[in-house]
Amino acid sequence: MSHALCLAFDHQTGEARGWQATGIAREEVAMAGKNDDKIIAAARQVFMRYGFKRVTMGEIATAAGMSRAALYLVYPSKEDVLTAVVTRLFAAMLDEIRHGLGRFATVEEQLTFALDVWCVTGFELVQASPDAKDLYDSSYQFAAEVMATATADFVALVADVLDPLVRRQTKVALSSVQIAQVLVSAMPGFKGAVTTTEQFRAMIALLITIVLASLDTPTAQAVGRTG
Image (cartoon, rainbow, N blue to C red; front, side, top):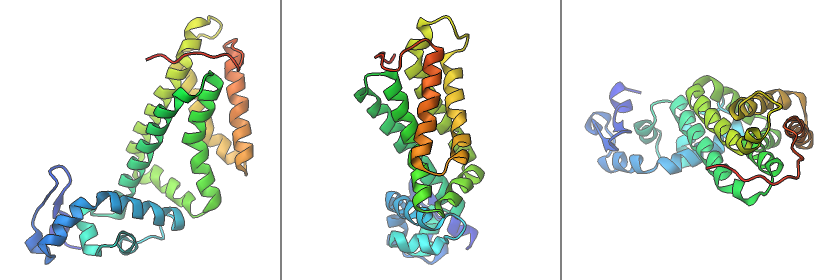
């Protein structure tokens, strides 16, 4: 694929550039820039089904209903597609958590919900499609910055849930952010130690119980979130 083709679409301006050099119809160039949602949805589907390494740009293009050349106008490489998919996936998860926390009255319920969305959902997908594990492994390699930023945002959400409790107690000399980091950091280890979703949820519930007990907080106590 030529350099001119890879640079034919500018993500920042949304404008097609150098389309004459690619030999692709101007209409297809313009349409490619408008099909970002369609590309990401199609890519996510094939990545989840076959993993990252086995999927080709041609297969992503076919799933998106466009030519391979048109796909390259928007994403110069498969790694770029993966980064876009992971970015969108994490944004959706964080949005679901932010909007869903208010439905739960207790800190225990809020933490359970947040960790379920953030951790258990992906675990279930891998259980249903073992090839999807390659997608998550590849995300750490090719979308590390995106994952680090999203994880930091999730830690902040968990800290926000914990903050009222942490402020009320004097037993534990840790900040709400530090406790949140402990909770979130434990999740990869749990994934490696369990084989079923039920076991994963049980491990998460046990950790939440331990954390709340350390803060001298009954798990059923309702605590409002700050902010």
